[in-house]
Length: 297
Image 1 (tube, helix red, strand yellow):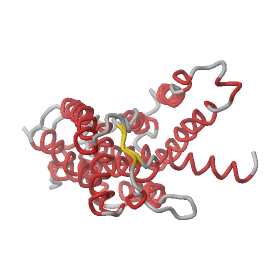
Image 2 (image 1 turned 30 degrees about the horizontal axis):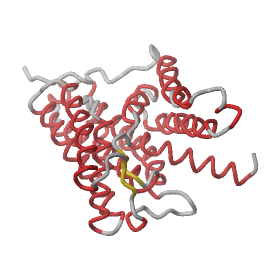
Image 3 (image 1 turned 90 degrees about the vertical axis):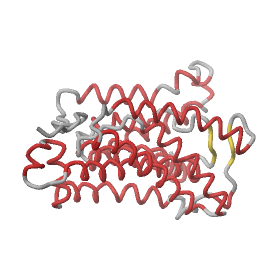
């Protein structure tokens, strides 16, 4: 592999890992505070949808990225209200978010763009790159150590981890449990929304009815694989991104294409995800109170 091909492969891996990394980092923060959000797939899709709509309306990519963030934040606010304040089940809202996105995105493709399959994003709405690398990718990679530092080296990070481990004790020492959980959940969902906007406005430059393609669920698996550690998530995202790109490169090889169907090759990233999570089960320890509504006595 010559230097140019190696560089192209590296850029492709960075592109593929960015949405998974952003989404996983957000979910790590939320779960460290005790809130599970399985609606990441839907948030990515909605972030992609509203990101394109805003970018095209404003004739620039920045409003689109901000719209993706905002869409995620609004969903995170709703999820936090249902789980942290109303103390509801953590899984059902996520299922609702995914179902909403699966219906709304295809509907908007038809109603807003008059297209049943996909809409190509115009050049003026796409995120410009720096030496071939997206600024969103740079942000995502830099965010991993920053989030690690916040979680393990700041008082707010200690409060987040305390709420996820023992909310009763955190409440006793004056930590506002619901507010801490809500902030973490909103930030986490915002990053998933940004991941969606990145996919539509940058990496793929298109919006389709299946744009997330399971990446929200891969991000959930990455949270477990990383043992709820942002630095580990960075390495795990690179691993999943590598196999995602490898799948696409292998698919265009004539010798492989003649023997192995594309549908089978498409399973490679998901099989790697299953293998990776299976390999760490029993060795990881989730936050002790994750997914459990906190009810004061």
